[in-house]
Amino acid sequence: MIIETNTLLYIFIPATVILAFLVIRLELKMRKFLSGKNGRNLEGMIHGLAGEVRRLDAFRENTERWTEAANAKIHRSVQAIETERFNPFKGQGGNQSFATAFLDEGGNGVIISSLHSRDRISVFAKPIKEYTSEYELSKEEAYVLKRAHVCS
Image 1: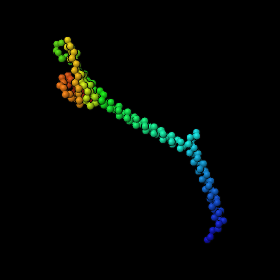
Image 2: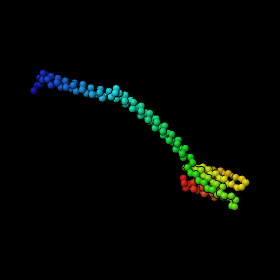
Image 3: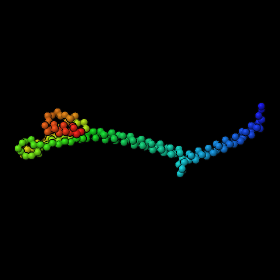
Image 4: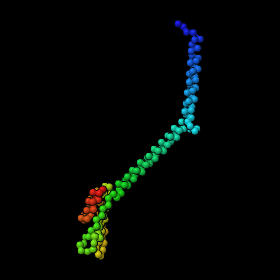
C-alpha cells in the first residue's frame, strides 16, 4: 500500500498549520506571563527578590552577631543581689551595718560589707568566683552569698 504524496500533503499541511498556531499562541502566553503586571517582568522581579534575600541574609547575620554579644553581656551582668542588715556591736546603735552580694549568672561578682560604729565606718569588698571567696567571709557575708546562689 503506497500512500501518495498528495495525501501526505493534505495531512501534514493542516497539522503544520495547527502546530504553528499552537506555538504562536504559546509564545504569546509566555510573553504575557514573563512581562508581568505594571511593566515589571518576571526576570526583573526574580532579580529583585534575590537582592532582598541577600539583604535579609546580611540582616540575619548582623542580628545573630548582636544577639551573641548581648547574651555574653547578659551572662556577665549582675543577676542576683542580696542584702543583709545587721548590728555587729551589740548595745550600740541599730542595724546600720550591711553585707550585699552582687553576682552574675556564673556566681562571679563581689560582696561589699560595711561595719558601722559610732566613731567610724569600715567598708570591705571581697571578690567572689563561682560562689566562693578566697577571703574569709563573715556569717552575714556567707548568708547573703548563699541567698544569692539560691536566687540565681
